[in-house]
Length: 112
Image (cartoon, rainbow, N blue to C red; front, side):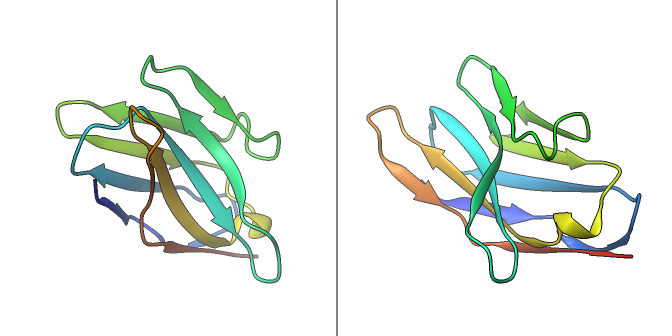
């Protein structure tokens, strides 16, 4: 399985971006992680095969994860962006038997 992330960019505080992660095969769950400069990578949103979603407390109410099964793509809609949301965003997936996949990162920069 290959994961292709896209949609990052530069946006002002309060703006929005939508990230996409296209998966080339069957996955069980997918997560978006981010890594800010000088900080550890953290999970920000998860969607399971049953479409159960969960979020980090720092993004709850502002970010929405969703999937389009026909396109094999998971989205992360990010609204009300803050400078602390700046970082490299990665998609991560698990296969049906616990295989782990990472996509390449996409940079999100929120200017104040």
